[in-house]
Length: 453
Ligand SMILES: Nc1ncnc2c1ncn2[C@@H]1O[C@H](COP(=O)(O)OP(=O)(O)OP(=O)(O)O)[C@@H](O)[C@H]1O
Ligand SMILES: [Mg+2]
Image (cartoon, rainbow, N blue to C red; front, side, top):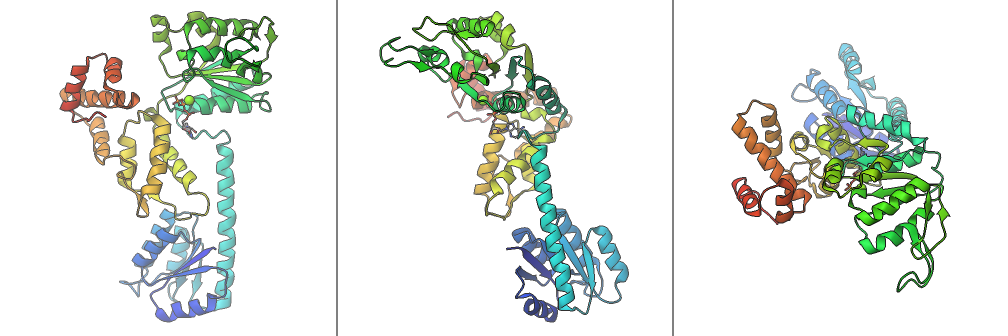
């Protein structure tokens, strides 16, 4: 049900409106001063508000009314506020409209007239809200939120590669949206009405991966009691997405390369060449050059799959996008019957900006969604997000002048934390990644007060 909030210090007026509007289709809320009005507004998000300008402590002035108006519009710029004025307050009424009030109405109140104004405001508010939601949908037609230069470049690259069949390699830290981008390319391609088949090369045991990819013939190995098609065949005419391609075993890399060169496959245990028509998209979060130098990734394979590289920036390099994304995830939990949308407190946004986000957008999504559920009050706090308010302080410290020694120490702490995060608290692995011994890492953890799992 749509809600109408009435803010008026005059009990007589409140009673008159309560009686007069009780049979309208709106849920009515009443407040007798600015503070109560704002609290109800935040809590219930009413579509329309009638606001008496002469509120205590300035019953005979308009200051308090205008202040409340400003606050309401800051909380929700789409709210429709109808200002109620005394006879002599014409200038103030105009000022209110300039500030963004929807309309004004002069006392004494004629209920029928006021009802018409309220109905129209409700109608308009609904239209505008629907309109805005539609617009937001089309902006994010690909489901990729962001406006920073780094992500705009990604949009351009997606447009450029989508309609051709060139192989695309998507690189980026864990949780930066590689799969999302792969889906976007597929959706924009001429193959959109066919499947995009995903296969995670890192998650399937080496001995099963070949059969998973290329299929097998009946009797190819023990347990192969019927012929099974591989993922590549299922992707025919569509897109094949090879996730974590950097984890693919060497011997399979050779077979993958042959398939990419000739676009034919042979099932395990089979002899027949089967032609397929697929577009290849690959993704990895490992450092490609390092993998080639170490010999874990074949160079010739890389040159095949990496014809076009889309590199996704980590979240900490996306500037203001982090706020867009946080709000986006917040809203996406709030859809449905729930209307008590929670906003981020100032401190919460500061801590979001200050945090390093080793798990990138996936981590942000998880923390925000959990916070929405955890938050008790109308706003989300740093604690709800599992972030310490210090993150905000640390963000500022990073920006301010600090000594080299402090900077080194901050960086050290960040690196240790993020290595531990990336390896789920596994000290041996984190030490390996940082290039230090385990005892050294324990020392560093102790020095920075970081606990291992
Ligand atoms: N720009 C974005 N806008 C909205 N949602 C995003 C964006 N980028 C990522 N996401 C969301 O973040 C989550 C992680 O994205 P995705 O799975 O594509 O990342 P990934 O790089 O493949 O991660 P991993 O390396 O761990 O496989 C998904 O839920 C995805 O929808
Ligand atoms: Mg992924």
